[in-house]
Length: 151
Image (tube, rainbow, N blue to C red):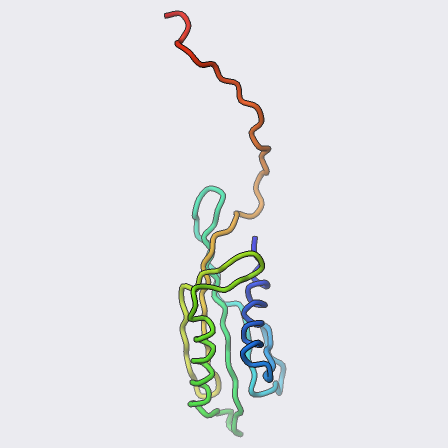
């Protein structure tokens, strides 16, 4: 199965490519973190039945943008909206290449607050079910052709 860490790292790489001068944190930000910066974290994950050996996976990655804040931790909202829009544009495509897979973007939602802006991107793909028995491939098959005997 494709790891969720690989998905979040691919998203982080895309944000770093767009904003090379900013720090991009993974999963948590430290106390007194750098601003402007970004936080990339895994959001909700849904696994649905696709077939007996396959799952339909919907994984959401949340990218949070931070800009300079005042003494009350309020930021300039137009700057946050600009960053949110730029991150949404990164994912306004058919999908994201992660390792040898191409994950389809099914949702791209933005939400701007007074001190941060979030972009939630949902990726959808199919993957093999984990675990289970590994059955050997079918080998030799013997069949008889012709009319039934005894008639």
